Length: 117
Image (cartoon, rainbow, N blue to C red; front, side, top):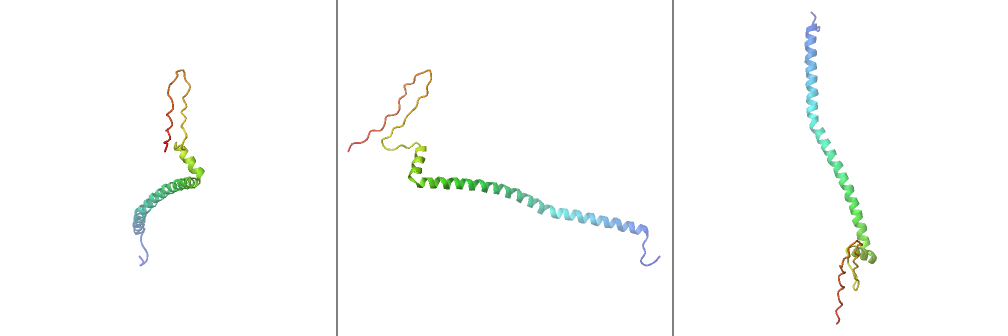
């Protein structure tokens, strides 16, 4: 036998050892990368949720900003007050009674009397 030659049996054993090392290296690499990949996935899911929440908050901010600008004018302020059922001095609230077979004797509340000074 020459110094550099190897037998077929020796090559088979070395090939099996090589395959085992490659397999172990692959398993080790997958195990090492699994944690960062899972973390990246969780971060992407959370980022998507936060982007959706940010979009809804921006819409709400725009709506509130428009409402604030409408309250800056007298007509907008009055419209907002009327939506909340506020009346001007001397106005009376009208109560509408729905039509049905029975007559109701409900009368509207009397208007407050003005104080004479």
